[in-house]
Amino acid sequence: MASPGVLHTYAPGLVAFEHLPAQHTTSENKLLFVGGLGNGLFTVPIVRQLFNIEGWGVIEILTSSTYKGWGMGSVKRDAAEIAQAVEYFRNSHNGSKLVLMGHSTGSQDTMQYLLNVSSGAAPALDGAIMQAPVSDREAIVRTTSKTAYLTSLNFCESFIKDGRGKEILPQEMRPGFEDTPISADRWYSLAAPLDANGKPQGSEDFFSSDLNDETLAETFGKMPKDTPVLALYSGNDQCVPPDVDKGRLVGRWNSVAEAAGVNFKASVVPGASHNIADVSAEVLEDFAGRVSGFLESVAKESGEQVTLG
View 1 (cartoon, rainbow, N blue to C red):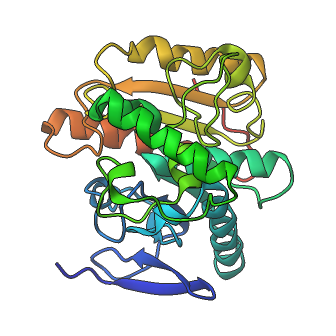
View 2 (tube, rainbow, N blue to C red; view 1 turned 180 degrees about the vertical axis):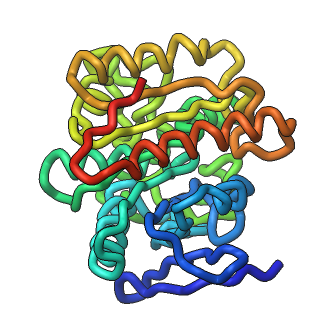
């Protein structure tokens, strides 16, 4: 499948692909898209649904974690590379609004990036979107036997204790991901359970349904207050355990963010799958409308604060 566009080298060895609309012109504002585990260029179906949003061009950012590189990476590395991309497009598209959109584990990247903005470690965005912000830990537990899960964690802890966290785990110690090289550090970051005090042990455990409000306050409550953020949780997400009350979960996120004065709005998209594939036209229209509405609000006159309702 051919797709016209421009390939940008935003840092040494790192590229981003800017899709061009049918008329082969560039749009004023840019939606910077980051996929999840195993994703890469043209692999996430929803990207093509974003091409028709007026005034916005879609740029897929490829990081060192793209495709199978995630197994040896981290969301902190991803966020640092995304910062390089944001800086590049700020300089090359002066005056454009930049919104970061993460899909699946790309939502963890987006959260980490926003926390970096708050700490002064990354350039600011004009907005951010988290699509399918699910818990990798809960997804792994759901699809892995208890024995395999606990064995893999024990193996990781042993590696990390011995200073071997960056070494690749044996295939049998990365259940469900045998074809991807994964370090002990990354597997533990993705899969580690809560500790005895109910605190996450995984460094990217942002979206699990069992996190308490105190923990959520360290993420949803620490996002930059002047950056509008939209989270779209898929109503029929295959990666989410069936006992998770999605409406209640995103409601808790909203409450924590609101209490902290963060401009954040999360909602459930009824009928949507994890990557918005194989859904009805009505679901697709609903999803696209929420994204386009958010981007339209971000594209408002410079200096006007966007408030999400």
